[in-house]
Structures are given as C-alpha cells and as structure tokens.
Amino acid sequence: MAKAAVRVRTNRSGLIGTRAVFALILREMTTTYGKSVGGYFWAIAEPVGAIALLSVVFSLIVNNPPLGQSFILFYASGFLVLSAYNAISINVAMSIRFSKALLAYPSVTYIDAIVARLLLTTLTQLQVFAIVVIGAIAMQHMQVNINYIVLARAWAMIIALGTAVGLLNCYLMTSFPIWQSIWAILNRPLFLVAGVLHLVDELPTTVRDISLLLPPAHLIMMVRRGLYDTYDAPYVSEVFVYGVALVIGAAGMLLLHRNHRKLLSER
Image (cartoon, rainbow, N blue to C red):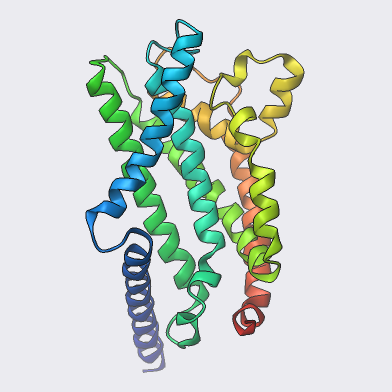
C-alpha cells in the first residue's frame, strides 16, 4: 500500500509538472511570437536577411566561398548554428527572471520554467535551420549529400552546450543583472573567431588554436561536416564540447538548486 501511494504521488507530480511545462510553453509562444504567424515569420526573416547580406557582400569580394559553391549555404551553416546556440543559452538563462511571477505557485518549479524555454527555443531554432537550409538548397538547385546522423550529433552538441551555458548564466543573470550586459559584450567576438565567416582549419596555427578553445567553433565545424560530404572537420572534438558542457551545466544546476528560493524571493 505504501509503495502504491508513493507511485500515485509520483505520477500525479509528473502530470502536474508536464501541465506546468506545457502552460509555460504556450505563454512563452504568445509573449515572444504573438498570436499571429507574423511573429514566427520574423524568427525566420531575420537570419535570412543576415545570411543574404553576408552572401552578397562576400560574393563581390571573392569568387567562391571557403567551402562548396554556395555562399548562402556556407554562411547559413555558420550563422544559424551560432544563432541557435545563443538563443538556447540566453532563453534558458532568462527562465527564472521571465517566469518569476508564475513560479510563486507551488505547482510550478524553476525546473519547469527552464524546460519550457529550452523545448520551445530548440524546436524553433531547428525549424528555422531546416527551412533556411532546405530553401537554400532548393533555390540554387544544389546536389547536397547531407549526413543526417552527423547533423543530429551536431545539434545534440548545440543543445548540450547552449543548455549548460544557460544554466550557469541563469544563476548569474538572476543574481547579478549586470552580468547580462557583460556576457553580451564577451560574446560579440564569437562571430569573427568561431568560424562563421571562414573555416577554422585554414587559419594560421596560433589563431586556429585559440579558436579551437571556443566550444561554439566545434559546433559550426560539426554542422558543416554534416552538410558537406567533402569536409571531414579534422579538428572538431565532441568530447571537448560535452566535457565543457558537463562542467558548466553541473555548476549551474548546483548553484540554482542551492539558491533558487533566494532568487525567487528577490524583486
């Protein structure tokens, strides 16, 4: 009887948690994208505009992109990956601050808020990536041998790293709001050094070694390995990315677990 009672309570808690996550996702969708398709249109139009601008500018400077024949696909494979990583990390980081009013209810936990934002952001970024990449391939009539297994591994790395960084920043940004501005400044050079505009492999040795210390560079290399069958990404390290994600994510979860009540009580 005792075991049955525990099982019932566990199932009920799981059901409440699932409902809370779903409700938070619906709230996030309405708040972020609005009630019309226009909000989702801008989620796609913004990266498309940036990629188109990069493609036009660099096509006027050089004859061919660093990889393949399509400027659009090359810059999409870098820009969209960095955008997805940044979107996941920042949305997870802002989970508690964004949903603090709802977290006053006993049935809604800070874990629910994190999971809701992580799921919605990940699904949105995956859709944007698929639409832009498939659209670029179809528009330019390219023959591309996509390695879907490698792409899946790449997206697992993106989600793991983005979540881990978001968890640590969730504590830091909630405890010290100024950290959000500092983090934004620290992240700006990533666009130049993580391989969005070039191949990390072709950089001078010293610069390449510095770039390889940045986990987002490995995300971009892995995605390009999945999109280009002629590119084997010799310097990518999944172990390095997951190792960094494990350390940062564990630190973030520990800090949140110990301090979430204090964070929720602060105004």
